[in-house]
Length: 426
Image 1 (cartoon, rainbow, N blue to C red):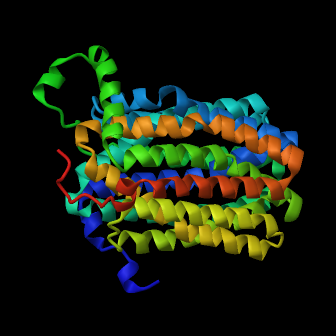
Image 2: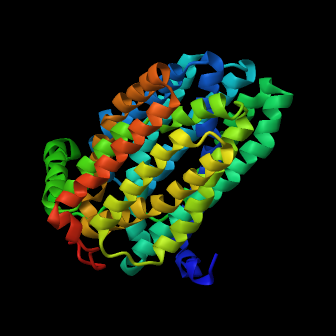
């Protein structure tokens, strides 16, 4: 990696951002163990792609049900309190799962579904609070760099965590499979506990709202708050186009992890370590290019979003002909190159273009619409895998995602949209 691709250390000189960064680094390390294990265990318990899809559907339901309401909540409550309380709730959920796994080596499907649902319900509130907090913890001219640094760090930690999955949990699964699920849940519980501690060190992050709005009770304001969030999206030339694109993308590729589990079993031997190694190709390259993209100061937000989406779609379609592990990892790595161009510019745009008092609602509404189609998409993927096989499913997902990206090119305002200057949102 070139020296100029590495973020300047001045970001971490901001104590509050540093605490948020450390907390989420620890939490992500645990997540990297848990999310892969959950779907892996669903396949091991049932042997069915449809069961894996069922677990994934339960993980997506909370985003559909409470997404915009979570955004309203985030815009009215101290975001520090939200981060601390909801991270602690995640620790409590995984602690109960750890206790269950101590006595039951092969979990019931309903336990996997319930755990996924509860953790997603927590995350649907936690995620917009974290995103809305970042612009308050660093100067506005460093928001883009902060997003890149956070995303790159997440990929580094995922890389380390997945490496541990392959090197440690993969061995444990072979030697003593009865302890596998218990240890995975325990690691995640510990990570949530440490993350909660660092998040508790953050200062108060009360949303910036005018005095008239503060005088109203949240229950009285909730309807108008939701409407205001929808209107903010509708008024914006970029977000109003990117949201339908995101819906189509999620509809077609939300079942991607089902294909990961299926391809590992059908083409590469089915070992947990192999599954982790496949994911390493994406995460490692994504980490490096997150840093590179964060330094590029991309101005054409719409073009970056559209073309990166099209590129990833084509790479996913190519998986249909990638039946060797090296070729599959190659196209996974190419997805890792394009993914930061998809995520970082649009994330920074939303933080700079949307006023602080609306960020939670916009993030929550975006998450709700994007996630509302996930159960449908996961169900379609499970059906296609069972009925038509991996090759057809990869082509369907890739073409669908590329189509979603191409939609943005038909809007002149979206194509020509530029990144806002720091301080432009009011």
